[in-house]
Image 1 (cartoon, rainbow, N blue to C red):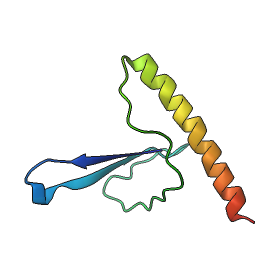
Image 2: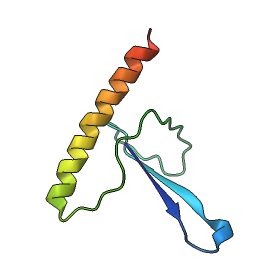
Image 3: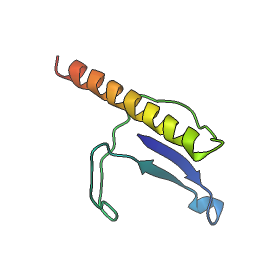
Image 4: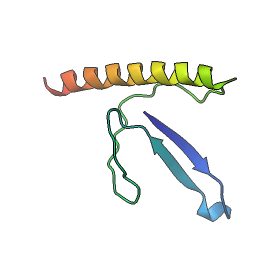
Amino acid sequence: KLSLDRSSEGAASEARAVIETYIHNFSGDLYGKTVRVSFIERLRGEMRFSDTEELTRQIAQDTKAALEIYERYRKEADR
C-alpha cells in the first residue's frame, strides 16, 4: 500500500513528492535506505475518516485488496 502526497514545505521550487509505503509482513527499519517501489494498480482515491475505527476498517480493506492485486499480478507475470 502506498500513499503519495505533494509536499509544499518551503518554496515552490522545493516542492517534492512524498511517498509513504506499507510493506505487508515486514518488520524492520528502512529509514535512510533506498527502496524500489513498483506501482501495479491504484486502490482508491484519498479519503477522510471520522474516527480511528473507520480508518482501521479501511486499512484492513486496503490491505486485502492490495494483496489480491499483487497475487493476480504475480500469476500474470509467471505466465
